[in-house]
Amino acid sequence: MGRPRMHDPDELLDAAVRLFARDGTRGLTVAAVAREAKSPSGSVYHLYPGRPALLAAVWLRAVRRFQDAYTAAWGDIGTAAEAAASVHWVVDRCRADLGEALVLQAGPQAFAVDDWPPATAEEWARLSTERAVATGAIVRRVSRDCGLPRADVFFAMYDVPLAVLRRYLLAGEPPPASAADVAERLAGRLLAG
Picture 1 (cartoon, rainbow, N blue to C red):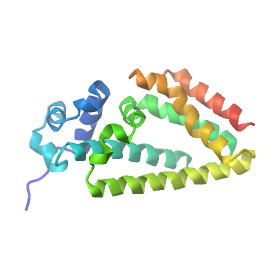
Picture 2: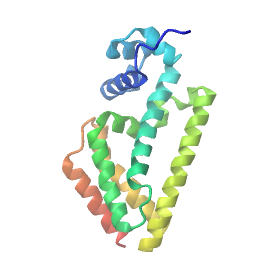
Picture 3: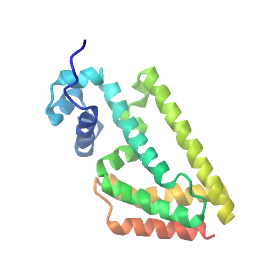
Picture 4: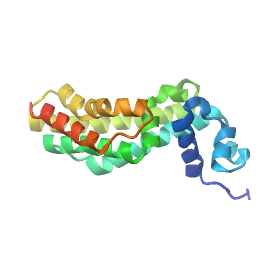
């Protein structure tokens, strides 16, 4: 029987996200995560056998959490009004968890996706496919509702909130509450045709 796990994987990944928010990817080392989490390096290595596995875990958890929360809240939307409201939610979610938002803004390349172990790369491919399928279904329904081309709907729903958030996230700052209203208003105008 193996030794029981002493440190929660989420606590270690929370520490990694804090480090990323403060120092960027270069600050994400196994030793730094162990220090930040106040745990032995062996605990981190036990879960993440090297830096590529750690970087992958940070990225995949952020994507999974965001995608699961978005799907739970907005997975069945089908109207332009709901789509505009979902844009507000995206900005609010990023305001509520700045660290996760900074991870997502950085993109997978910041987390050395080319160095990930094959099984992790396959998991990322599956997750990307799931996200594309779910997003495509939402965009088709909203497109039918408002009569706009799918590309326009996609832009309003997904590119507009990113554009509103981008300057704050690049500065490492939480967006103001008004950013959610701006994003929803802009998306609503675009979706109204």
